[in-house]
Picture 1: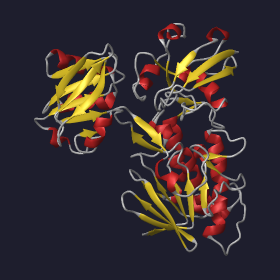
Picture 2: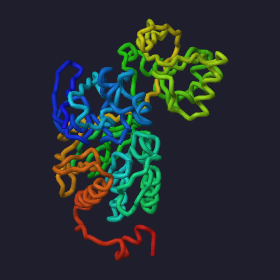
Picture 3: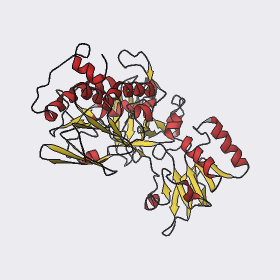
Picture 4: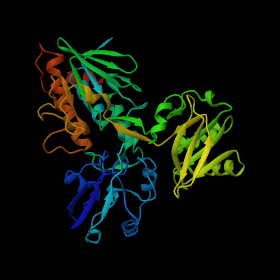
Amino acid sequence: MAKIIYIEHNGKEHVAEVQNGLTVMEGALQNDIPGIDADCGGSMSCATCHVYVKEDWYNKLPKKEMGEDDMLDQAYEPNSNSRLSCQISVSDDLDGLTVHMPEKQV
Amino acid sequence: MIKTDVVIVGAGPTGLFCAHQLGIIGLKCEIVDNLDKIGGQCIELYPDKPIYDIPALPQCTGEELTNNLIEQIKPFNFKFHLNDRVQELTSENENWIVKTTNGKEFHTPNVVIAGGVGSFEPRKFPTKSAEKFDGTSVLYSIKDKTIFKDKSVAIFGGGDSALDWAIELSNTSKVSLIHRRDEFRGAPASVKRIKDLSEKNIINLFTKYSIKEVKGNGTLEEIEIKSEGGEIKILKADYVLGFFGLIMQLGPIAEWGLNLDKKTIPVNTENFETNKKGIFAIGDICTYPGKLKLILSGFHEGALAARGCFKYARPNEKYRFEFTTASNIIKDRLGVK
């Protein structure tokens, strides 16, 4: 279990306890946190679960696997801190992880 | 004007199998899809990815699944209307009048929405200033490449569309290729060709840059691009092309007066009819308690929706359940003995 902090583009903060093994994307959906669409349901084919992760946490996350950056090219306003939240698997180590949502996903 | 028993919106696996079920029970249908090919997400998003949860198919790709479904409905000769989108839905007497973007009009008692997460549309530039040039000098697809001859063209993106067009247009235009990182996801041969052309100064290549501003008074004159570090460059441009892939938008479906729950349409689980008589929703776009977004669930939903269509298409007939193994009528419809 890890506490994940989701911050909407307008600054509104949501905190959710997310079970180990779920993804950060699933954590948002299960807790009705707005800002993550996840149109493709987590198959890494749509780039609508895009989040920004600040450096301190970004470097602690497991590295991006093949294909994630390709998909991020197609996200809304990606930058070097961008991740797809469907590719971040929650574990105890991620307790306190903060992700920022973009202005919109599509 | 085309009269039919059912219009299916969406040619993904769910729409295709629903068409099969309609054919089996003796109904006609017309299938409309915004993409230029049949297969929906399976063909657009993951043609080569293996799928492991189609019953009785231990493994198949999105493309194989699509091809098999097309094969399965061949006997019925249903017509596909690709590159077209259902725009308007109005009711008249017991019928629905369905109008498409390309000006087609269908009259039908039944509409089956198998639209997935909506229709695929090109992802556009986030920049506000790009909007006023949209469709004139800011483009997301190319219909006539001759308009770019001897012009300055700024191409954005890192996939095959961006690379292929950069290579192609560099023959006749002054091309800049701009991408947000220094790796490209296009075919290795194209990436190599781009690097060659860049070294020969035939293409101006800017990596780790993205668009900042589009400028011009009436006509497009120049664009500003910004590096990750905040450095700004100004490029002269007559045209800007963006190839950022496709996103899915619910589009006009939202305006048809259907109940909506976020981006999905609530249905009953008896025949997958929506709150409107004769309008059904199946596959990823429908929702009900326990809904699973699996292709196999879409197949089941399509089979039941087809039976739901029967009572409006043949109000004076009684639907009779038959097995394909035993029914001579069904075998006739399939053209088998």
